[in-house]
Length: 398
Image 1: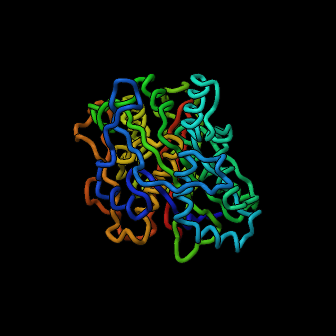
Image 2: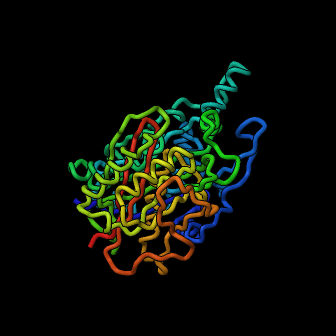
Image 3: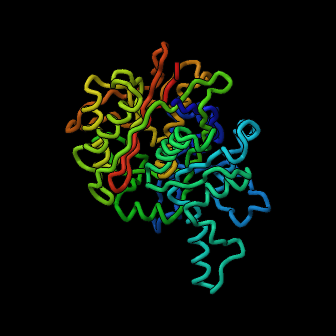
């Protein structure tokens, strides 16, 4: 069954709607990655934060107020007319909400606990529901008064990619007629300090696949797709296939040969009934850590021996953790969208100094364009702690 991605709302450091994100993305603009202090003691870091004002949650949902849910609401408001049309067509009980996150309202919870330790009382704004991992799905279902399946997947940096796969399964099993799916993660001190303790955070803009790469930059984002069985208003962009696996190599380090990543990509191609040569562009996980980029290079070279145009977009967006899979699928969606008249692709932004110990990949350069003829298909990789791997294939359905 085809799962069409008929509407897209998103907000991240690159912009506060899909048009502004597309302009920044295709220009290879890294100006959204800004040096900030205050996240880690006595250290400034590049972070990709959203600077636009965020909407306030309705008064009746104030106990669920968190930056994470504000980001999600900003994305949802962009496609509210499409959502309301789906509600009118299918009914509130036939629309699901499947989201990925890793932070939820941890930042609000951290501040609440700090206040309790200092003053023996929580601030008035604190509510336990803010920090539950299910909070984003609960909030969105409550805001829209939906009664279909609503849950959150939290598998670290594959969370929202898995949310898209789970949404497609709900349609396959006829449990839903439409699913709001995607992911959201907000900047918070807990996660940034956690990655810093792993010595995985760079003091500079991240430099994926360079011999000089030395770590990640963290970002934040919210992404929301409306997935249905039918194409709406001439949109033909769909989730064509997905491949997921867990190699369970290590709690945080990737399997060094790229075995799990290779399996995920191969399964995605098989799921979509495609060959490697059918993929016109690959959005890499590309975190700019030494181990991730090494194993991903090996895996990509094995699956695409003839090469494939590819790039890591994390020097622009930052690594948005639980939102990364959906965000980078959204970047593929933007490249396929009719408004991308020049058929631009996201360029690979780095210092150009290749790591000669790794297989050479085919980097997308500024102003490179997608081939004009249909069908056009793209792959997006996401790899996470615990050897959790997933690849999605987004493309035009003929």
